[in-house]
Image 1 (cartoon, rainbow, N blue to C red):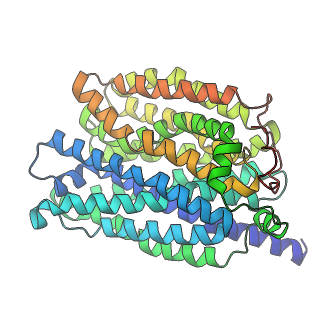
Image 2 (image 1 turned 90 degrees about the vertical axis):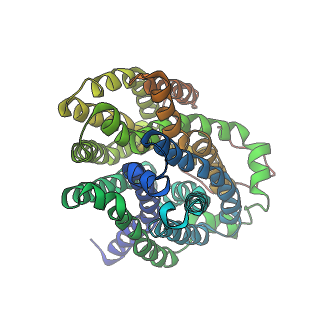
Amino acid sequence: MSSTAHDIDTSRSRVITAIAIGNFVEWFEFGLYGYFAVSISTTFFSGKSAGTALISTFMLFGIAFVSRPVGAILFGRYGDRVGRRAALSISIIGMSIATFLLGVLPGDQTVGLLAPVLLLLTRLAQGFFAGAEMGGAVTALAEYAPPGRRGFYSGWNGFTQLMAQVFAALIGTLLTSVLTPAALNGWGWRIPFLLALPLGLLGLYLRTKLAESPEFAAAAHARETTRSPLSDVLRLHWRALLKVCGLTIGLTTTTYMLVGFFPSYLVKTVGLTSRQMFAAMLIGLTVAAVLVPVWARLSDTYGRKPFLVGGTLAVVLLTIPLFYLASSGGFGSALTASVAVAVVLSPLLAVQGIAAAELFPTAVRFTGVSIGISVVISLMGGSTPLVLEALVQATGSSVVPAVYITAAGLLSLVAALLLKGKRGAAAAEVQPGTATTTAPTSP
């Protein structure tokens, strides 16, 4: 390999690392919140019954997502006007500080009602900065990638989501092994949240060292950017925006079910110990993480559509049987269901991001992808653990959450089937967009 080729490969590896680490921080925090929901509930809602405290904890998890679209709009505009690197540098440090602060907040036994208020404010800040992170990461990975490998590069977004959950599960397994339940609920759960700050500082350093996205730089040089990306998306690319929303519904509800609801479900409803729950989640997420790069690379050859259709169809057909399996009792059944759910999710995590990016031209890609993803996550992602827990408590059925996930999967299946062509932007080149005064690209 020549020195020039080696330098290019090294540069691209740095891009993946710099972008992926922010996505890791975002999903690491979400995983921690789900895994330690019981501990968080006893810290901030100690005066309530266990069920009510958990509902309150999930409610704050969901309410905080209202700030995601605000962050998506503001950072999307900034990213489409100023550049990807600058927007992503701000978002990663903002998310990291918010996650760190959650780990040092006083509980309600110390400051009373102020404790859940501070928790809410921290979650709002985290959601605001996260609103830019996922759409920005998807956009940047697609634009930095070499021709013919955009799916593979973008797949690292899904890979780091799962590895963040794996890392969170590993920490949870370690803490439950070495700490008593009282110590874990009292102070032990705070430790992993503190790790977000050094990770964020590392990510900030790496991102500030990146060159600007080649495609955005080319569009800016050709004066093909726009001063009103939000307006252009809503006027010229609204069909693409609706498709991104549709594709995101099934992925979002299944993801937040798995990482936000399933851990407490396995403990409270199925009856696993915390150690068994962490083991089941760890194995399932690891298997899925291994599969994501495989599906992503194959999508460069066979297109995005087969994996989106296949993934959403699997969600529709398998979610209810897998919940029956998980609730049938025993670690073996719960482990099998956890692995199967994670595997079903893996092709969607691998391909949805690049499919969304390929629906928009460069001039409005950051805004279009960020808003499409963030609106759905705001409406359905953050509320999913709360809705599923409420359904279980209201009906007494351990399987009723699966009906909700199946319905969301049906909506995404329709969106996937509506993608253009049999292959759905198969290995399509993400080209610098023309000025948005021209007709929109066909979604």
